[in-house]
Amino acid sequence: DFSVRLEMKGNDELAQLGRAIQTLANDLAYLKQERSEFLASISHELRTPLTYVKGYADIARRPHLSEEQRANYMAIIYEEAEKIEKMVKDLFELAKLEQHSFQIEKQPTNLCSFLTKLCEKLRPAFQEKSLSLVCQCPGSVMAAIDRQRFEQVMINVLDNARKYAFSGTTVAVAVHLQKQGIVIAVSDEGTGIPPEDVPRIFERFYRVDKSRSRTSGGTGLGLAIAKEIVEAHGGTIAARSEQGKGTTILITLPEG
Ligand code: ADP
Image (cartoon, rainbow, N blue to C red; front, top):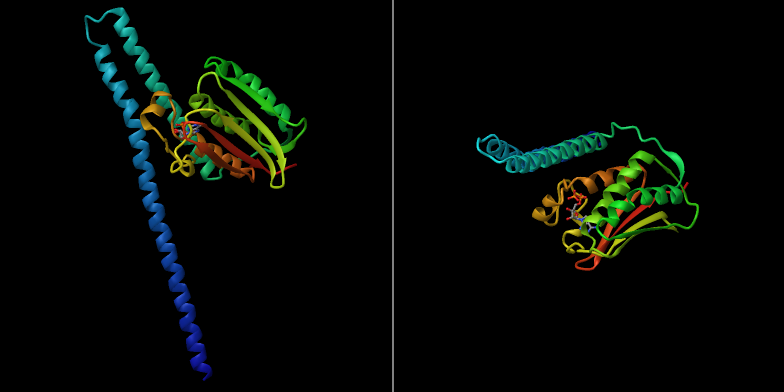
């Protein structure tokens, strides 16, 4: 009986091992699929600006163009090259963040003064679109943040608010202390996001309106980068939105 029990135990362990190998194989297949989809997205995203660069460079070198025409073509080439540069920079940043091969340098920071200063710095860009940018913070809220990277998070989120807010409205950054920690809410009154797209905006390359975002210079990577950084701080990032009304991005951070 003992040997039967041992054999059963042996079989059990083998079966367990078999299941573990199957799970690993499934994970590997999923990662492989994800990697090829990611590579396909990168080539797709880079192809469009490259097509413009190539096309306009070809036209710009034709003889008998006026100075003005040539300058126009050159300006388009420059703009598209800038988009490629931003995309490559963002991709590099995201790759570093996802491999966790970056050192996060947290320093105790008064979030209120940090955010107030950042709002001051960004306000002129908002005023250009007749938007007011307000920062509401209860005085002194301490958090351990990597200032440079957290500034990147706020810039990415605020840049979207600036792009999608209706002209003449207010974009608000509000800090609250709640049970789950510090909550930073960035609210805009603007186009909003359709409900089915809300959970997807933190995915790499995800854009609600591809053509509109392209003209406004987005890479579709800003929120994916923001998510990686916030999570590296032990925080969370989420969106609430109502189409045609506006969007609120909620960032939580541990206190301290
Ligand atoms: P992008 O570089 O295109 O802005 P993001 O990752 O920052 O990429 O954002 C992804 C998409 O989420 C945007 O293209 C846009 O469709 C949507 N989005 C993000 N923030 C807002 C907002 N405040 N209002 C409306 N749509 C937004």
